[in-house]
Structures are given as C-alpha cells and as structure tokens.
Length: 135
Length: 184
Image (cartoon, rainbow over all chains, first blue to last red; front, side, top):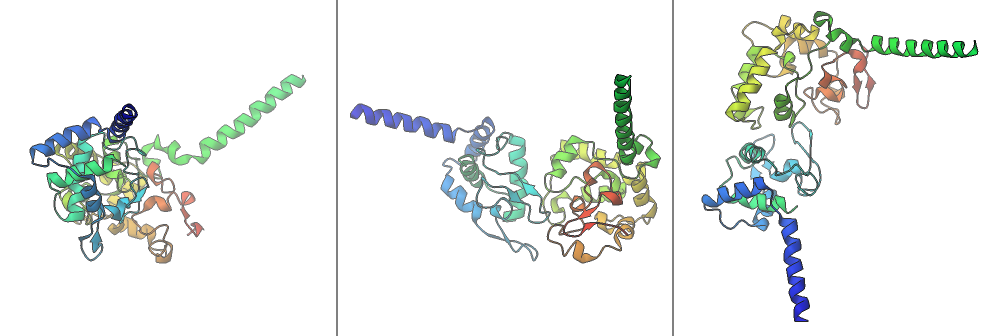
C-alpha cells in the first residue's frame, strides 16, 4: 500500500511537471524577474491580476487584460478598439505562445501601460507568466 | 478524326478559361505596369506585417504620405490611444520601409491619388482624414460603416474592401456586410 501511494505521488509529480513545463523563454524571464526580487510567483495572484479592473479614459473607462483577451485564455480574444481577433493566450491551445522572450517583453510593456497605466512590476509579470503558462 | 476534335475542344475550353482569368484579375495584371495599376502596393515587409498587423490590418504604406508616417512614428507610445512601442532595431526597419514606400514615392494609381490631393504641410495621421479618402467615401452613408456592427469604423478597410490586404480597392471587390455590393 505504501509502495502504491509513493508510486501515485511520483506519478502526480511527473504529470504536474508536464503541465507546468516552462518554455525556455519563460524560464529565462522567470530567472530575470527573480533577480528583481520576484521570488515566489503565484498563479492565483496572476489570475486575479488578469481580471482586475483598472481605470482608463473616457472611451475605455474600465480596463483589464480580459478586456481584449477575455477571462478564458483558451478562447480567442478581440481587440477592443480595432475588433481584430486575437489568438488564444493559452500555450495549450496556441503552441507559439510564450516561446519568444522578445515577444513577451514587448507585449508586457505595451499592454501593461495601456491596461494598468504603468509598466508591470517584476513580481506582477512573474505571477502573470505563471498563470498563463498553466492554461 | 474524333480524337482530334476532342483535343481541339479541350484546347478551346482551356483557352477561354485562361483568357478570362487573366483579364478579370486586372489589378494583379497591371501591377506589372506600375502606373496603370488601380490599387496600392501590397505590404511587402514581414516585420511591418507582424508588428503592425498584430492589432489591425497592416495598412499598405502607399496610403499615407511620408510626412504623415513620420508624424505617426514619432509618437508610438500614444498610438491612437494604445501603446505601440517598438524596440530600436524594429523601429528603424519599419520606419525605413514606410518612408521609402509612402504615397508620393509610389507609382500605383491610388497612392498617386493620396499624394496629389494632400495639402502641403498638412500631415494627417489617420488615413480617413486625408482629402483623397474623404473624396472617395463621401457618398458612403454612416449607417453602413460606423453604424454597422460588422464594420464598426472606416479604419476597418478590409471589412468591405475584400482585397484591401492585397492592395486592391476596386469597386467590384467591395461587399458591405449586411448591405452587399457597392455601386455609386
């Protein structure tokens, strides 16, 4: 029985390893954020930030990541202004997601500025990446 | 004898098909001849296509003057209310592409239209605010565009100009969602 439980734990670890497997780009960025004291990234905090509403301007008074990407990362999103379709953020659906550090940095910079009105902190970016990569 | 007849029939049918295909696609056909083209040059720079086309249709550079592009590129942090910052290297590539393919540097008919109707010193950064655009769209009722959920805005070229991304804005390629083809 003990043997069986051990086996199950080992299997459990193994399977979660698969689902949480970070792309090289994510690994690189996570260690970068860690040097900026973002040492305990948390998917739950990332999810909360994803749907948190920030104050915008008259045209888009309430802004969140979900404004364009929706709250379900496995779904397609839509640019609030241009209405252009945005491919799903979830790496499990769009295999190209989270594969380029350049792309991740670019979009964090642009989209944090639009949504939050400022750049995201290293801790926020680490939380968001942790959340997104699990989707 | 019967065989010969059969072959000639096939050649005849093929001939008709090929000729009509060539003649019907005059935008592409005329592209070869520059000045006679009815459209604008299609986007040919992959970086421009990727970077700018991520959020909206990658507007062919021949739709604005170099002065307008310059003005737009000088404030990407506030790009019509959105942040569209680029890293230095990408910025340089895209800026160069836009500058060297702007309306007044193109031989395409519609680019010439944009260039010739532009007032000197006036560099609108919205294509929809150029004199040529306004002239070409002055008969289009708002209900078909801004009041049409499937179109939403005049900036959404390809909602009605089905070949906009290939640089063709011919009347026969226009289908307005919910209204059909356009005939003025």
